[in-house]
Length: 489
Length: 66
Ligand code: SF4
Ligand code: SF4
Ligand code: SF4
Image 1: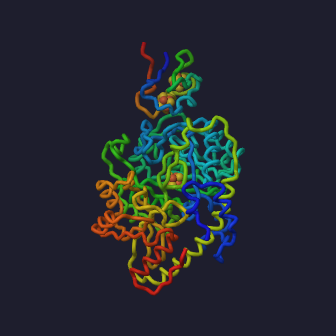
Image 2 (image 1 turned 60 degrees about the vertical axis):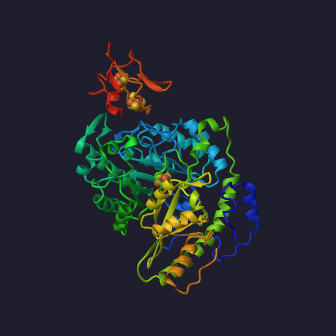
Image 3 (image 1 turned 180 degrees about the vertical axis):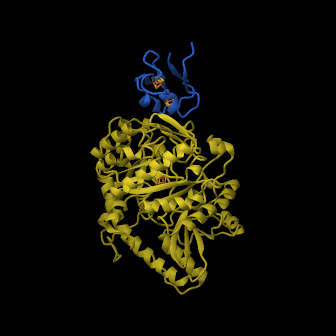
C-alpha cells in the first residue's frame, strides 16, 4: 500500500521515487479520478488540485499566497491594515509585502521545496483587482516560469468588472469575491467607505455601488466560465440571517462555492468591530447557519481563513520558512519534486476514494437516525495521523443517515508544547471541541484522554493511520453495534 | 500649497501613489512621501485631493503646514 505518511514530514524526492517504483497498487480503483459523482468531469479537472475549491484535494495539495497588492479601495469594519503579527492567522495579515520580482523568487523557492504546491493566490492585504499592475506583473512572471501553477485571486469586487477580461486572458481560473450583503442598508454597517471613480463614498450609497459592482463582476465571470467562490463573513446580529439571502443571489448568478467564515474580532486586532465589541459567531452557530444554507449554492466548509502570506497545506503555515531573507538570491525552478509527488498522489487518491465510498455507504446503511460528530487530528493525506497534542486544528466530520460528511474544522492552540501539556490550553481545546462526540488521533496520553472524557468527549487512538472515513466507520460500528466490516487502509 | 504624509501613520499600502495625478508621491525608505514641488493639490484634475480620499488611515494625507 502506498502511503503518504512515509514521506509526509519531510517530503524528499528519493522517498517518493522509491514509493513509485514499488509499483503495484492493490486497489481496483487505482488511478481513479476521485471525482464526486455529481460533478461535471470538465469542472473536476479544473478543481481537482485546488485545495480550496475541492475538499478532497485539500488533503493533498497546498497553496501559497504572495502579498504583492497592499493597496485597497474600500474599508471594512473587520479589517485593520496597520496590524501585523507573525503568530496571527487571519485573512489580510502579512509580515512582509513583496514586489512582483520578489514574489517570483519566493514562488520558485517554494515550488522547489514544497511538492504539494498547486495554487498561487493573491489575497491581500489590499485588493488584487484594485492594485492591478502588481497583481498582473506577478501572475505573468510566475506563469512564464511555472506554467502549471493555478492562479487565483481574492477581491472585494469593486474594481473586478474592469479586469475580468484580462483575468480570463491570463488563465486565472479561480476568483474569490467577498460578498457580505446584497442589501446596502446592511452593507452600511460593514463598510464605512469606498473609493470609486476618484472620490470617497460613504453610507448606504457606498454599499449600493459596491453591491452593484460585485453582482456585475460575478455575472461577468460566470459568463466566461471562470469558477467563483463567494466568501461571506458571518457577523452575528449584522448579517447572519441575511446570508441566506446572499446565498440565493450568488447561486442565481452562477457562483461555484459559497464560503461562510466566522468574524474574527479580538479587541487587540484594533479593527472597528474589535473595538466596538462586536462578537464573532461560535463554531456551533456557524454550523447551524451552514446547515440552513444546505441546498443553496454549494458550501465550502474547509476554509482556514489563512494569512495573506500563508504557504503549505491548508491548516498548516510554513510562511516563516520562506521569508525574503531566507531565500537564495538566484533561484531556478526544478519541477522534479512536484512531478513525483503528483504521481504518488494520483495512486494514493484512487485508493482513498475507494475506502471512502465503502465507508460512506456502510455508514448510510448502519445509521438510521441521529448523528455523531467526530473531530480528527490529521496532517494530510486524508488519514488519522496527527498526535492529539500536536494538532493545531481538528477536522470535523458528521456521521449520520446521510453518510460521512465533512462539516468544518476547529482551530486550537497546540496542547503539547515541548512535551508538556498545559492545563489551560487543554481547557481551551475542550471548549473548541464543543458539540463533538469523539476525537480521533494518532496518539493521546491518558491525562488529556481522561479530561476529555470528563467533558463528555471520547478520544481514541485505536485507528491511527487509517483513512479518516475508514476510522469513522469503525467508530460507528462500535457505537451502533452494527455488524459492519470496516475496510482496512 | 501642497499635501504631506504623516509618515508615522502610513501603512505603506501605496494607494496614494497610483491615485496621484501629478506623480508627486514616491516610496522612500519605510514610507511614502509627497514631493511638495510636484503636488498640485489635484487642482484641475479632481475636485478632491486623491491621496487624502484613498488613504485608509485618517488624517495621514494632510495639508502641509508652514
Ligand atoms: S483563506 Fe480559505 S479560501 Fe483562502 S486559502 Fe485559506 S482556506 Fe483557501
Ligand atoms: S493632493 Fe493630489 S497632487 Fe498632491 S500629492 Fe495628493 S494626490 Fe498628489
Ligand atoms: S495611502 Fe496612506 S497609508 Fe497608503 S501609502 Fe499612502 S499615505 Fe501611506
